[in-house]
Structures are given as C-alpha cells and as structure tokens.
Length: 307
Image (cartoon, rainbow, N blue to C red; front, side):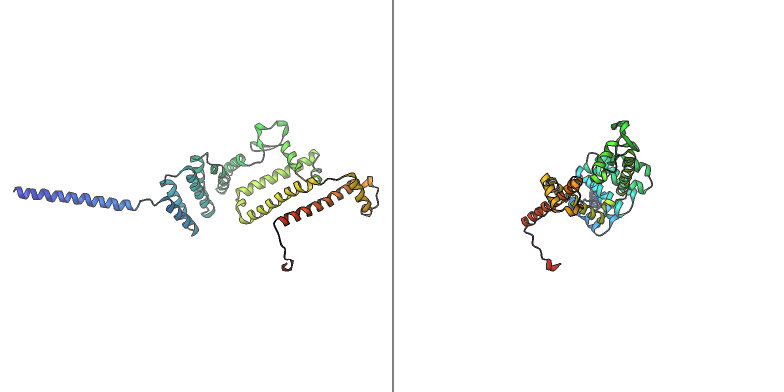
C-alpha cells in the first residue's frame, strides 16, 4: 500500500510539474508576440510604410511607438507631429490630425513644435467647420496687428477680433513703398484706402496659411525665387545704390553733353531730371563693375554659341 501511495504521489507531482511547465511555455509564447523590437527598427518600419503609401498603417505604427517606447520629449513631440501631418495631408482626416496636434501641445507645451502646429490646428478646425475656434486661434498666431491693450486708442486704425492695427503700422507699411508710390498716400482718405488694401492682403495671407498653400511645391519654388530677388536687391542697394555720389559739377557736365535730351530747357528748370539721369548712369557703371568683380572671383566662363 505504501508503494502504491508513493507512486500516486509521484504521478501527481509529475503532473503538477508538467502543468507548470506547459503554462510557463504558453505564457512565454504568448509574450513573444508582444516583444518590442528595438526603437530604430520600429521607426524604420514606420518610414517604410510611409514610403510605400501605407499611411493608415504608418499612423498606427507611430502611435504604437509613442505609446510603448520611453521617448525623450524631442522624439515624442516629433512622432506626434508626424502623426498629425500624415492624418492631415495623407489620410485627409482632420479630427485624427487634431488629436495628434492637441496632444503635442498639451503634453509638450514648451517644445518648439508646439508653437509651430498652431497654423495646422487652425487649418484642421477650418476643415471640420469649427471656424469660430479657428479664427480665435488664428488671432493669437498671426502677425497682423497687436493686442488692443498695447495700443493707444487714438492710434487704432482698425480692429480684428481682439487685435488692432495702429496708425504706426500703416505708416511703416507706406514708408516701405517706393517713394513715388508712397507719396500718393499722404491724405487721411488715401491712407484709409491703403489700410483697407493692406488689411485685406493680410487676411488673404492668413487664409492661404489655413489652406496649407505655404506647403505647395510650386509655391515654395516661387518663394525661393522671391527670396533670392529680395536678398539680391538688398545687396544691390547697399553696394551700388547707396554708394552713388552726385556733385553739382556732375549735373552740369551731364547737362551740357545731353541738352537735347531735356528739350533745351535751362538747367535750373530741369536740374532734378538731370540729377536723376546722372544717378542712373552712375548706378549702371557701378553695377557693371560689381558684376565683373563677382564673375571674375568665381572664374565664370560663358559659351554663347550654346545659346
């Protein structure tokens, strides 16, 4: 009897061990399916999904990454920003995009990207028809005007929500125009006309930002061209236009050599026109000299036969 009893106990013990072993193996197998790959592999997989236009899957993979990896603030904010862009631009799902953008702003308010997503949030709010909230956010993020509390009431030209445009801002905008055009906006009525055009232009600019026009490839290309022109013009102004010096003798000599150009009028009557002609001639000479110097420094060679 003792032998049979011992045998039964051994069988029970062995069965228990087998059960524990099987259970442990099952748990290990089940856990193996949820083992996280290294972060760089998980991120590379998300990139692969995007490159193959599997945007919904890429969004889910990025969501998995930001929820399951111990990311630093920079990386976490970047992942949320990518999720927002995928949802907004690829999936055309403004609510999904807003969830990512708002999470970025709430979780990482001091991160630089938190300030950059304001325009994206405005655009997505606009798309779901929440224009009131979009306008309120836009008023906080656009450059047009100032808070009303910062401007003297006597200088307020126009109000846009709780922001205002001051007479100083209008006068600065007019002063940036070429002198011949700026001279047309001296009277109050003319300044009012300019203010309407100026504010309207700014509002169109804001509408373009809401619509994502600033991300269109053809727009970015034109912006780059405009930037080159502005910078080149500034360089020209500083190195050519501002260096032209006109003396009285320059005006008199030019007048004597080009009397017919001024209809034979006395110098005193056409002195301003002569001075402008002298200025343009000197600018052309200085510009030609500057271009020659720049071309020589770069050792530029031209092949006109190929034109």
